[in-house]
Length: 305
Image 1: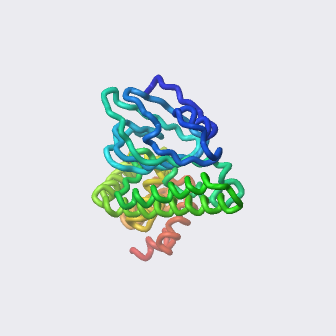
Image 2 (image 1 turned 180 degrees about the horizontal axis):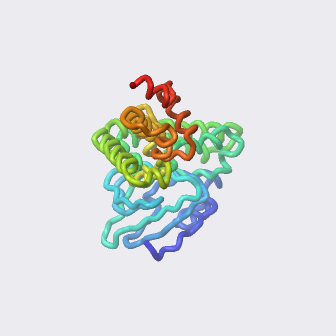
Image 3 (image 1 turned 60 degrees about the vertical axis):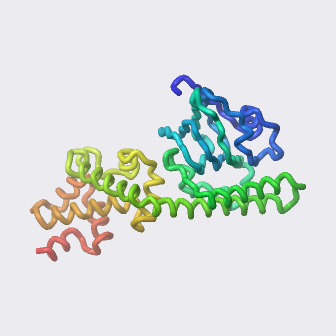
């Protein structure tokens, strides 16, 4: 969709108006039945929303893009978007748009002065790419749908001093379930997940065996994730579930392996090894090495010999 200019929507009311919906019952939160969105074949648009968006959708026969990835979904999925992210939708000209499910919109002002205002930024799935969406089972779908409908009933009822607290608790419940479901997804798709681990090993091996390490320094998590065509947050979460270590720790482990080879198999000085491994200062290398092995590079070399 190169010619589609993104439209910025600052409020939930603006989203309702853009999608041809009635005015929202609450200005800061809205649960929407996606069947009411009236999507049309051949339609395409790009949006930047200044509020959180959680989608639970089924029968998705169109292209979805946010971040830099575009994917055709053919099964139920759940996705999470933070304020300011670009969302692009493209409906095939000859397709029949028959999606079902729910969309939950939350303006940041609704979370103001609550613990969730800060905590919501810690949920890594809000920064996953579109092809890293959460695929949900029928049971999981029903569970989340039920919570969303309870939230809708809460804000549609007479508002009182307890309304916000109850909805906040239900939001946190959805996020907790999402973390559980992603954990399940990492484990249930082990073949795919372990293939990523193998590819990551190849990326690091190529990096350290070439001239990039000397010119660019130690590879970053962002670099590795980009090479794997996945988001850094998704990579870190997946590795944590599968191995108990995050992406940064995996990079450091590879560094230490190479350092041990050079310390035991060459006569290079510690400073020369540090430079070859991308460190500007040998002290930084020595500190990392001791943290990982409980020995300084010199002590390791002596103990090996």
